[in-house]
Image (cartoon, rainbow, N blue to C red):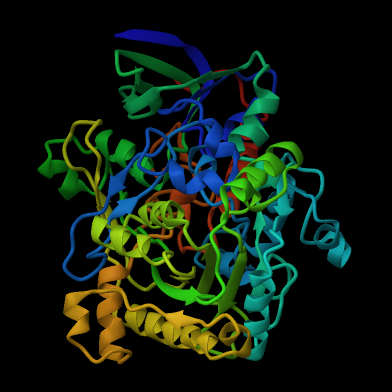
Length: 576
């Protein structure tokens, strides 16, 4: 087994968090940083916003599957996670949503000092370069920055359906919100996305590219970390890593190892190394180094999708010349629908359980697929992990009309999942128990959200488009009265899937929290030389897409490290 030179810090994972951590730590020229990424460079398609659905089920995706269940996700099961520089920020939908002040004040109330809203907003702003001056300059610049490394743009096509969705929302009493990341959180808005100059701005392009020539930052691709290395005192001193699937090396850290491998890989590495639930580790014959609730507290925003036909009598297929025009327009001027995830980019935020609340518990994605775009709707649904039966059905829906698909995401999921090891082989994918809809209240919230969305079909704005609800063929549900609560509960059981927002599997919390894996400075409890800095640490999932919060966590975590090592000598531990 070969070995690397020693580094001050080893960062595992160059994703949404790890790229930020490594870049920020390498700002200190006295420190040597090793960044290990299991994937390689993202493909050129990653840069083009419209192409992101095509990246799932490829070599740039870990291609995780959740465990089979007879109560949820019966027609779905895939969990796409990025496996490339930038991680999931290189394959995701690029939405820039922070959640709200109540999310972070709740974290602090759970016993995590300095994680309240007033403490985290400076770190959101630290990473942000917002190109929309109206948004950036509002409220005296309190909410946004134009000086950070990561581009954020308000990107929308000129498709008139965008305005129609907003008009329909207004008919139902919802406000148009210019900025969902400011002081109001209930309403509809046009998405902000991590796009710079018309191309995706992942954490790799925003944080690693500017740092790539620093001689103290060594980025190693196709480097799969297998487990942690300890000395005789139980302190973490490095990692065991396989390079390109061919040769194992040991890399040593003089100060710390930082796990930023994400909410699935981080708990896997911890448990393979003997840090995790004692009974589970013992059942696999893994010596227990520290009994912690690793892999528990797994949360996601479960989603359901349904479909509405639009413009049946007027929809026309884009002729090849128009498709070519769109490509040329994007390549030469960064215009056209290739700049968007679909031709519409409208998000909605509502609270179906407490209509007087200031904060949402449902997010809606509204996406329009034009007539004849069979491949686009199928790739979009494949991204959600739906099976061939659903893919073939939705592929027929654009034969004679435009197709609006609405995805409802539940923010305040009460159910919890967990991650367990499949075996002691680091190359075996772990077992993921999403456990969606385990709590009946989650189903009830979805049904309320569906009924609210169905009201859109009756608005003037939708009626002019001949809006028509599509009934997805599900034999077990079709036996029930259509549009009854019983029917929609059945529909949820079959169609619930992931919004690609897993978090929480290495929970942050105080000493009094038996489920906590890391403390409020993200140090793994009872283990010296080891931190977790990624979305795993979230004690409670936030009310929005977690990419921006994960970047915030990385910015804040990097500052913790800088503060803790500011006046400490060059070495912390010996290999022993």
